[in-house]
Structure formats: C-alpha cells, structure tokens
Length: 95
Image (cartoon, rainbow, N blue to C red; front, side, top):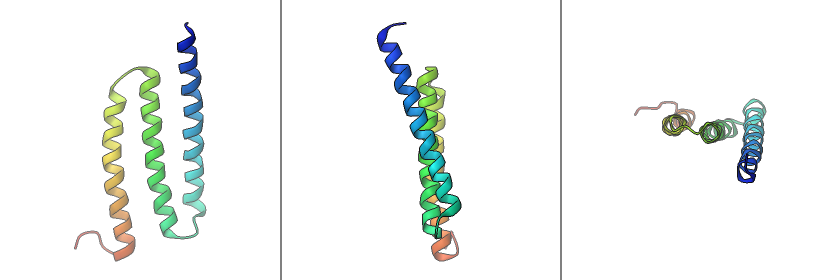
C-alpha cells in the first residue's frame, strides 16, 4: 500500500465515525425533542446523515451504485420532510 492509500483509509474512517456520531445525536434529538419542529428538523438531518453514510460507503467500496441510491434517498427525504412539516402546520398535505 502506498502512503496516499493509507491516508485515504484513515480519512474515510474518521468521516464514517463523524457522520455516524451525527446520526446518533440526531436520533437522540428525535426522541427528546421538546417540540414537533425540532423533531422534523432532526429527521431531516438524519436523512442528510444517511446520504453522507451512503456516499462514504460508495467511496470506500469504489462503486457507483451507492451514489444513485443517495440521489433517490435525497429526493425522497426532501419531499417527505416538506410533506410532514406541512401536515403538522396545516393538518393536511393536499389542499
């Protein structure tokens, strides 16, 4: 192994730990959030963290399929966050 590969492996491991810790903290915020707005924001943050973990997994394995999955999850996460926030604020999603 070369020195650049070793640094890449170390950087990926640090990134995995950091994003996993952020995911854990977001899960805690979902459980103990004082109000519904905090819980919605924590769920949206969890989607972003999940996308980060999927992208990191794709980088570490060197395959492209994870990036396509991350794009699909990003689109679904955005739409679901908007729909849930709208439901909480107005009581219905479709007017």
